[in-house]
Image 1 (cartoon, rainbow, N blue to C red):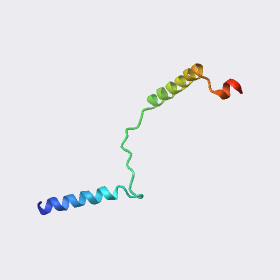
Image 2: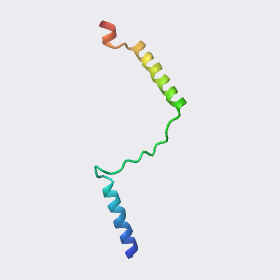
Image 3: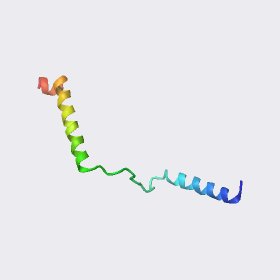
Image 4: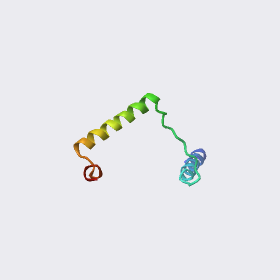
Amino acid sequence: MTPVALIMSLEAVRIEANSAMPNAPVVDDRRRESVAMTKVRGLTARTLRRAADRLEPTPALTYG
């Protein structure tokens, strides 16, 4: 192994090991969702919840 490759591999190992530390920086690489997509997701969740309650109501609503 050449000296340059040795140094590069040691540096890569050091960076990988430091990424597991509790104080490692957190990088959020997800794309931010648009407002329209957030609204559609909320509407879908509410619709699915209503359908689930019609098919199998929760005991608290049925017997309470």
